[in-house]
Length: 143
Image (cartoon, rainbow, N blue to C red):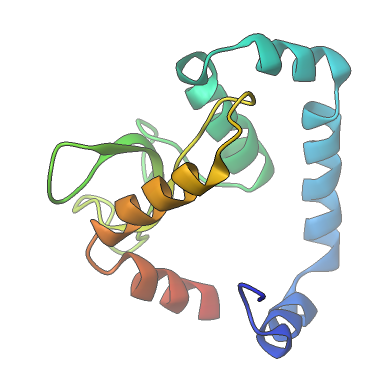
């Protein structure tokens, strides 16, 4: 079963700026397809590479702004609204940066992680502990 309906996915794919996608993919390839960088990532612990991964993928490639920069919309170690657990990162609602409402949570794992079911459950538990996370993301996605 697909995560998205094909018609919905195709609608949004048609709306993408092909030049921006091609540029981002070239940046992605130049960093993440570099064999030396790949080896260094494999040898790093999750905590060692957490900020680097968020910076490379979300900032340098996808164009987010990471905390502590002004007007940031990406942060690390984002605490659940209930309980003491933290997601490795979060994409913040652009209209509510200071209030820290997440529109998406990011959970990173080592390249050695084999049981992805536990990772999926952990990530969705983090999402469920952020009020409005799914609905806010859908709103931003439509714009």
